[in-house]
Image 1 (cartoon, helix red, strand yellow):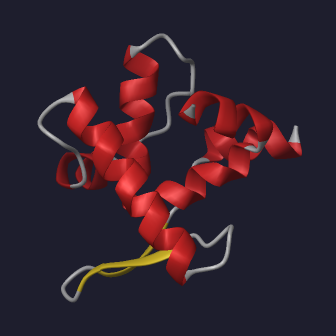
Image 2 (cartoon, helix red, strand yellow; image 1 turned 180 degrees about the horizontal axis):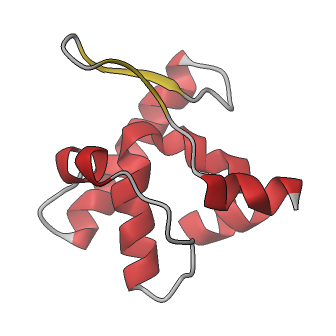
Length: 98
């Protein structure tokens, strides 16, 4: 489902906010080539203990995000210490811009 959603509109990766990087790894591990760009620090923090847990967490975040922010939002407050985080995955952006 997630792969189909992203094939239809690659910019919807932004729906997953900081969980995107862990979700991208899960997809890549399942032989879905989503590219190599990564944010290992954010990925390590926003990932489940298993691939299934990561999928669930990312989807739950997506549901919350879509109820709070407009589609396409890429700015997220991760913590008071870290401040605002700008999600940008050049691999996914390139699918739109060619």
